[in-house]
Length: 621
Image (cartoon, rainbow, N blue to C red; front, side, top):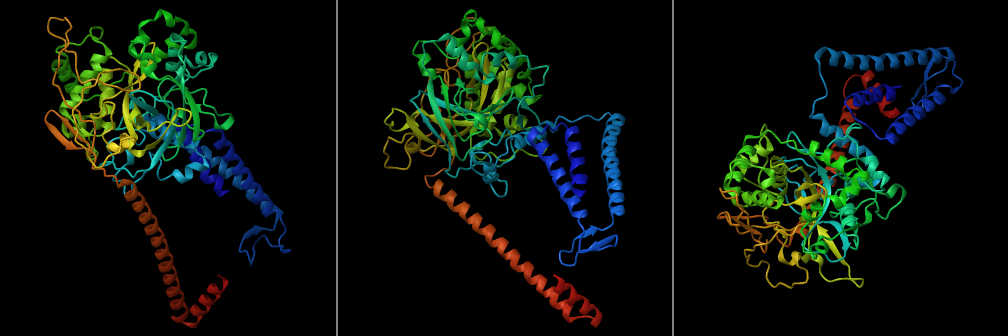
């Protein structure tokens, strides 16, 4: 009875607030109710020790039970009525409260609803060991630092990030060019200093059925478009083992075919209607297209895919047009921010040379380069930016006051700026792998890479019509580089004799696809004729040695990471575990000591009657 009375109102409240539990959780709850009720019925209908009185207590087990059939019937009749009335009252009170006050579910509950639903639907026994390291292999006991810099779209809650040297993923792949972006968590709604995935209701989902008819998922869109345009291309195959990374998401390259993951039954991948793909097995393989194969044809990605619209008109039966319309509706909302408006205007005037923006006059490459250079010139990359003050908006504080941060800071502001320039965008967390990290090939010409927690990253993602989603990198120092890695970690083949090497400025050119950016911006002169010029040229270090970043005369140490981080992280974990065990042992000893002292006091003090009662009570225990 207590189980039902306690759980049902919670279940009822959860349904009202919009929590949509998985079917197995509902079935499990009903099975629990029925099982416990059945056990109690068996217990109450059993004749115990021949007792005839109405209510009795079992001396040895100290359990209470009915001995009268009449009293049993009366009790259950009253209990069922009470439960029905209580549950109805809960529902009526909620409805009256909502009707009288006009109260509706606040938007802030969207994140909690999503987190609860995701946790319930993705729960497995393997997640228990990952409970305290859910995001990228680490968790700080006192909530000061988040390992890897990515934590499910939550922004500004930690003072900084650190690395413990843990292995997040094991990847086996053919050789690739530039940087391999492994997309994991995907979110498109910024609210209350966090990113959450876009909710898709039945009326808005006009594309899923069309994709399913083509035997693909909406997440397969960019793979499908490349395959249709370049039918003679051979896709590469990547194998991934998820170790220390969050077990909620599939980590995969762009232009991947998610619907063919090499697993079957309950281990097969489970996509959401939109955004990320749920992880069902920690080992999987996917086919994907390496952008370098397309670049060999002297065509850029993704613009080249988007140019020949007539050649892609056959995709209408697969929901491409409907999905594109959905994306432009859902991924264009811009946060109300004065500092964001100031940044937009500064990019227009200082980096594009215009006062009014017309999207058709500029290419995506020019816009993304202007945004990237704005960040490089005016902001600093650091692993310890501090927390966002309570009551402050994350974007406002970052752009207006803080002006320093790590990847999730730049990804958030970059995604919002892309929307202001007319490009649908969203926020992504995952891992990045440099082509220099491949090391020596195996016998089958594939490469095995241990992707460490230092490779955790966040970036923006842009949608190009008739091309799909592609990464948009705005974090300084990540131009085909990773400032958090040492030179030895970046290039395992290179033997270094010193712990740090001198950083040299580099200038790279945008070559699209999985990675690649440019530091040269095309400025729009006043006469509206396009010309190439360099605006606020900046030097971005390649992250060698101590990871020194320079931009507009600013220099900051970005990581303070040494080669001993792995050992240090292991020792810290051991000490925390031993400390916890010692605390538990100390608590047990103290608790027993208190109990013994209390018992001695009760047996020694007071009158004979109280001491006799105490003796009998302790004897029963």
